[in-house]
Image (tube, rainbow, N blue to C red; front, side):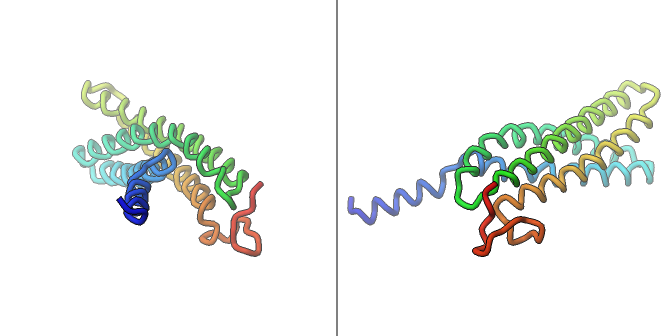
Length: 176
């Protein structure tokens, strides 16, 4: 095997290597998309009195909450990898982490309420409408919190996309 073929093999292996930062970035998009989608479906289902749409909405919010768990847990590993990279601001990481904590717990709460609503409807428990209304409100709050956490996360490696991100003259993030 020649030196150049060894380099090509090493590049291929590096290309396919996946770490906590990669998985975190991939998985965080699931609840960021599903919670607002579930919220929209739930609102439409309630407005149109469409039980099938409400059912899909509840399942969507539960799926979002379940997917938020590994995304959240991988955040710490992603932080350990990214904080060692040149030009990465520890302040921006901290701000993202604080926003993500709130978004995570709101998303899990929305998922639990959605699950509660699912069981309330199946067992014909009274108050199912109030549970769905609470689910909708919590999902709205989670949607906003997820959008904010995503924005803060984007600032970590893409300061050029945000006017408020601190950058030095060379355009790299300022370590803090």
